[in-house]
Length: 167
Picture 1: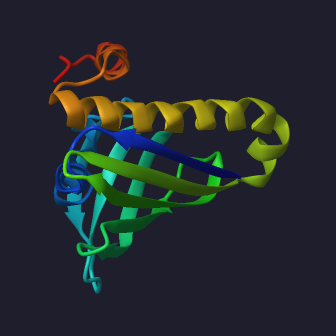
Picture 2: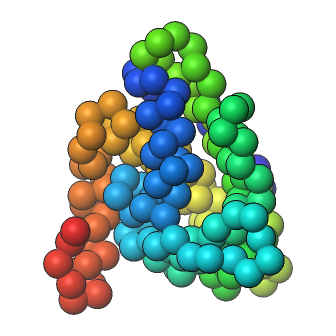
């Protein structure tokens, strides 16, 4: 399954890029689908990885490619929830003016066979909706410096279930 979305953010491209790449390990600061995250070192790689607790389960990601000049970031999941076989995400940030950026997220996911066959009709629309929300969360966070309402609600629910206080 493929999900691709492009949106305009009313902020300089460098600010968007900083959130996506320089603060890669802190996706939990802004993405409603990521409740906890941390950067991790990846042996024999020029890039870092991160681990995330998400609405789909715990995931582990490794950056495959990052280009500061073109503001391109690509990473793959190296440890996926049971519903997924593989996933790769590519982000592109393009300046449109001094204070306007265009961001594209291109996601490719291969569902595991049994969950895909049995629950694909439920998983695919939820995954699409959640990824579109992630893009909206990014826009809100970069433009305002604050978490979106969806992010706040997601954290309250997650940490209540986990028995912790929301960040």
